[in-house]
Length: 60
Ligand code: SF4
Ligand code: SF4
Image 1 (cartoon, rainbow, N blue to C red):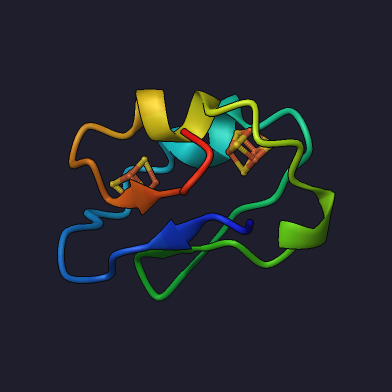
Image 2: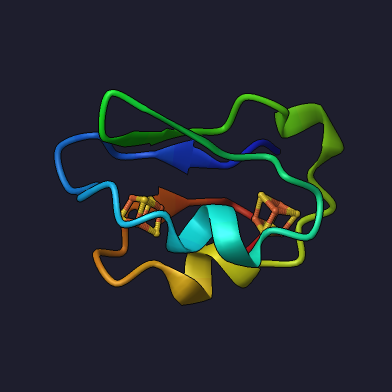
């Protein structure tokens, strides 16, 4: 299951980019986009790091 970013609550802080060990996220137009979601290993680091609870994953 890929990470989903809730754009209404993402503030573009980039913490998900910093913590993801597989560079799944990129910031585009001040929002996080899970561009390489196929590389996600469901470690939940992005979910735990997001200050806005904007990353949603069924596995986390
Ligand atoms: S950590 Fe959360 S608020 Fe920050 S860029 Fe990522 S999804 Fe957006
Ligand atoms: S769950 Fe882990 S591997 Fe997947 S996008 Fe988040 S930080 Fe990256």
